[in-house]
Length: 333
Image (cartoon, rainbow, N blue to C red; front, top):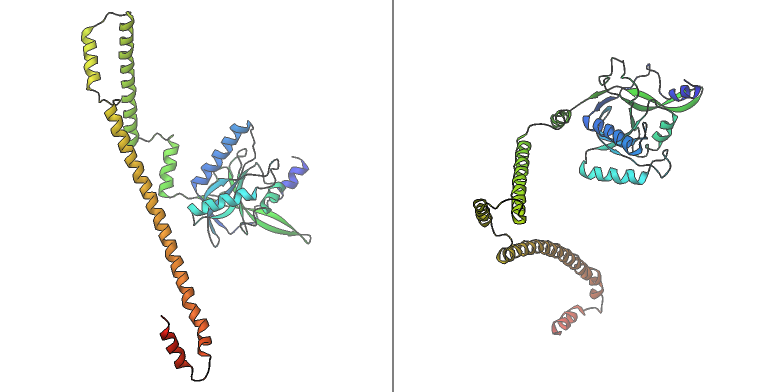
């Protein structure tokens, strides 16, 4: 190990420094990170591609749950600069679908945490005061520490901290023990995935039956078409019994290509489209009606305020002229 490797390794404090954070990791981000790494390996033809993503979850005091994740992009040609526009857009999109989830950290794939990760980590402090770092260490063995319940997984979680040494401060990481927590729905999904998606559900059995029936029907129709073609070409003798059976079978099929059927189909299709257009027109009319009502309310409020402003001016005039003013108004048609 070189001296540079030793220096980079020092960004993680020793095991004597413990974190009071209670971290729970759900199966979905584990699957997302693993799929992200596998896909990039196949796309880039590299054994160690650069992987970067965001972590979503909930935090209640010192209790944190990592529930979901999504991929992040970097600036063109710069792996050390995060594309903040893409991050903000994806974060807002996930916020609309999962309003209870917040940005709580980021993930990457590396054998060890280095100073490069410190520079990347500082770019996420604008979205979270203390973002967490989750590292997939696919080239190292699992941790032998007995206080990490997720020691069978090649993941390491880190919490940012500040170390003061020789009157100087520097940003470091503290390893955080984590546990894998699953809900009932996640447990069923993980079990189904572990079996290769081969669960014998009623829907799957029905689809397999339909597929086998359609395949058999296609094969038998192909045999009949080939027989008719060979009989017309004179390659096989004509069997009038078989031909009459084929003619009766074809006659029993619904006439789906005659003019009456096509006309009825077009009529029903136009009716459906007309119904859809009427629905859209009704919604647009309702929106316009609401807009007109709001405009009338606003205009009526403005007209009600005008007499209050002009009222005192009508009361100013010659002494004793109020009665004359009212009589003058009465004479106006």
